[in-house]
Length: 584
Image (cartoon, rainbow, N blue to C red; front, side):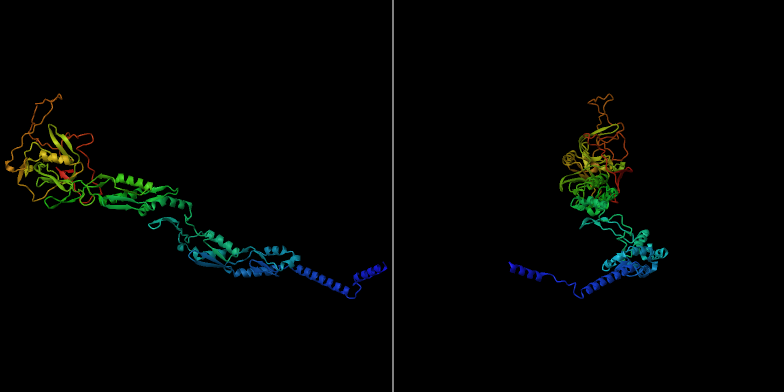
């Protein structure tokens, strides 16, 4: 038990801490450390006190390092830097101009702002600020007169050099269709806006100023992304591939998007407008090119010779007013289409002669006609035409059958002449059977001709009637050298003109006044002048107003109107005349 206690006492002795305070030099180190700390504190406080009048380290004002500078020193440094300041102005066209701080008297606005910044410093925190950069921006000022003088002297302010802005617009080309062409800003600017943005730039000591980015330039009305323009583009896109193809036989005229784009416009509200004047001019152009009515025709006769038929209305004539309305409607729908124009007059063919190969050929000189169907001669015959000595010569010209009527009656003031086959082609001039004649052809027409119609043997009139339709051309002409010395009788035999018996008096049946018809009442004309082949004068001729040829039904009339000549016909068109009155 005793040993254990002694060992424990020895152990305790060994682990007991040593008392160093009693060692020489220990207190001296404490004193030194305390002195160092005290000195450092005094120096920190002393330095901090200095920063009451100077700027902290790493202080940047308006781009100038003013560390350790007083207010006046900082101002001098900032003003010196401002004098060397350059503002570069970026202009359209890759052009640049500059404004120097010295030229406009650029300087700090006042020292008060510097002093306020200095006073805001907490001097005891200077140590914390030494390694932390601080940037400040204080207001600058310039000489107003110098500034405006420099601005006015800039090239971009020269109005004579300005290029006006161009709005974005919709264009059309065959490769791309409709598209938006980007806007062009130009160089026309707002002077007040330039002064404002330049002032902000120099006061903020900015290095560059882009006039376009700053909105100094006058903008175009429409930009590429303008909703109005993009909306219009959407409306017009449908016309890019649109075509209207007019067919004229084997020929065609194509109205495409390139032309349509010039006719279509949109209002501010986006409403589409089609230029009716342009459409009208287009249709008039087609009429001038393809109309053949009222124009001269070169005709190869059955005699092997060619004649020029200048008179008459036969041919194609576009109904311009109707076709303009139709084309406006087609464009409005925006649908491609193939069509033939509306016509006032139609002919047999667009390719080659417009009269085609089915027609009646009437040689007024030879007093002989030919009727061709599909290029084959169907019938030919002598005839008797109008008496030229009485002013009733049958007019030459190119016409068409107006209509045909069976068992018509030609009426006058005091006569009625029935015919079995009535086929008018030029107003009231037509072909018909003449049962009262026993001979045809030769020179009969010169002394005993009709009032203008073509008198035919009944069998010939019947054949023509049965094979002709409304609209078939009737071509009347004169051909020198084809005169016939002899006439023919109903059997086709030649007879001498001077042996032709006188024509019998016509039998004219007049109804009694009470309206009843006596079957045996036959009264010849009072003066004996009417011929049995009483004829109606050509359209436009001077005649008694009560001369009529009643149509077969309500739809036909012997006075079918012929469309008037217009500006679309050939300049060599001539109207045939009879008795001094124009006959269309």
